[in-house]
Amino acid sequence: MQDPRPRHIVLLSSPGMGHLIPLASFARHLARHHHFAITLITHPTDHSDSAGYRSFADSLSDEVNVVSLPSLPPDAFPDTMAEARVFLTIRANLPHLRSLLRSLESTAPLAALVVDPFCLDAFDVAAELRLPVYLFSTSSCMLLSFAFHLPALDASFQREYRDLPEPFRLPGCVPVQGKDLIEPIQDRGKETYKLFLNAMKRFPEAKGVLANSFEDLEPGAVKGLKEGEGRPPVYPVGPLVWTVPDEEHECLGWLDRQPRGSVVYVSFGSGGTLTLAQTRELALGLEISGQRFLWAAKSPHESEANAAYLSAKKNEKNPLDFLPEGFLERTKDLGFIVASWVPQVQVLGHASTGGFLTHCGWNSTLESIVNGVPLIAWPLYAEQKMNAIQLTEDVKLALRPKVTESGLVGREEIARVVRCLMEGEEGKRLRKRAKELSDAAGRALGPGGSSIRAMADVAREWMDASRP
Ligand code: UDP
Image (cartoon, rainbow, N blue to C red; front, side, top):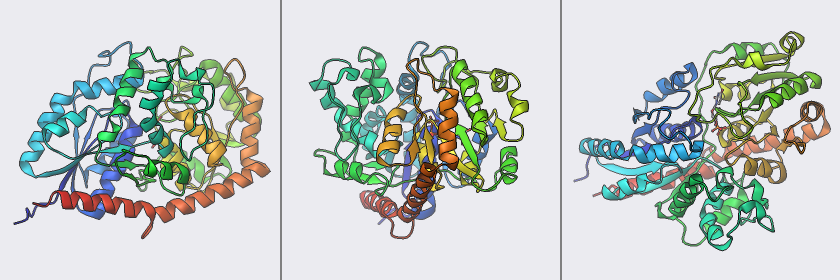
């Protein structure tokens, strides 16, 4: 006789809001539309104590069982890059994961384990428990395709990838110069490189790959992925973005008072920061542009080298202290600055928001697409340069400011792109494109849409696999 209890799916998210948000959104979809019992295993993030995170976690726990694995001390891996710390955190927590899965299994049969791309070590635990394991890709299909190609590239080219003689071509995608491939593989001598390579070598072990993207956004990359040999099936199930209805925040009240489509929203994601010189240049550029802006400002980082993403040291300084003298007073009628968590999905969905200056994190990109908001692409780290190239040259949804040889984007250049996006002819074209993509995203997630069908296919697979 069939076990009458609902099938249980377990999702595992690595630290970082950029991984947690799309997995949580997928978990909620599965609970609502496919009636699985869902456990989402999380790690504490830099934002776990923020109001934004709490409202997110509260609204999730109505439908999904949320369990957090222990946090590690901030200096557990002191000298490694942020991405390496994420991999090593997962590895260190495997014994906790094993016992958690065993205890979940004792209450209801588990149908599948779904993990994000930083949790590949969990494949071993899944194998011990004979649990089918699926990958949930939180980035573009172009990046997913790159992950499947990295092992061959590693074997065929021995020098640093910035020395590749030709741009790298993935099937169905725009060519990318070696220096613009993902940041963590740019130094092959580093531990981060080995961690990424080893993780990507294991992608084909997944029983299936769910991708937070949709066919009309990346038709070439999706086709290339589906045609690749020796790959698990790929299911584009996006764009999955997180929505919390009726959240209150003072910036939403400010947006209510601005004209329709007049505000450029400026944010570098949950952890992106600029140098002090660049922060000031950005402030002056926004001021010179004369356009309205809502800026989620962060304190600058001290070295030129990296961003605050999952930083071992928290930056407690007040971002407003780093702005140019008199800036707040001079821009008080045009700008609004937030120094804490912004309800970004609501901001992008607000009628007053007409453009988004973004670091091109994939969630930010999808949230903008869902809401039909065109972009200024300002990538900082991780895979953001690849996203920026794709958004500018392929998807044609973004403008890209020029960076000087010293690595700075000057105030006049910032003012130029902001004006161009908000009031120029090119801005109009991008707005039209943004509307087309927003409609396409709606269709993908509407009745019979490509992503809804893909989710139903996976759900059916999980139901069938767990039948006695
Ligand atoms: N986010 C937000 N408020 C903030 C900063 C970030 O709601 O003040 C959310 C944003 O909407 C997105 C996620 O955090 O869902 C950031 O993910 P993304 O992939 O864009 O960039 P990451 O932070 O991982 O670099």
